[in-house]
Length: 127
Ligand SMILES: [Zn+2]
Image (cartoon, rainbow, N blue to C red; front, side, top):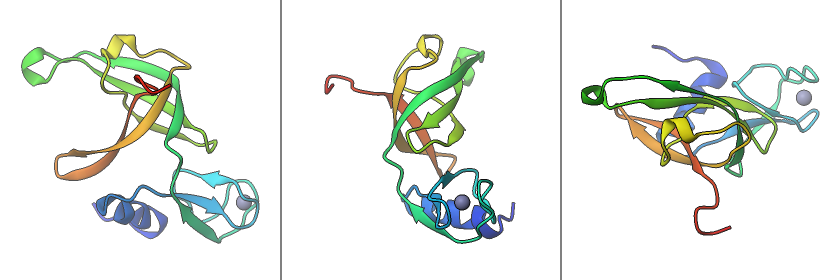
């Protein structure tokens, strides 16, 4: 797989354990997936900023998998506080207990040698 342009920048940051998304210099909107041009205003200049990690589950699906293959897992669309939506999963809770609107917090994890962004239920014991 060869990533180019803004995708390459996104994954280069992640590979260093540094999760960043684009913020448009034209209108100030956050942008994800990485883009060459802002979908809101058409500007082509972005800053790469670290998201707060605060987010909410927009939709959730349980993917059934046999126990010897790791068991069921969760696939979710997550709305970041920054106003962008990413596909990920919620960990640290039974896949079927993930609910729409659940507050979650981002965390970086390793999978197959790559750094990915996953989410945990927010406020466990701290909120
Ligand atoms: Zn813009």
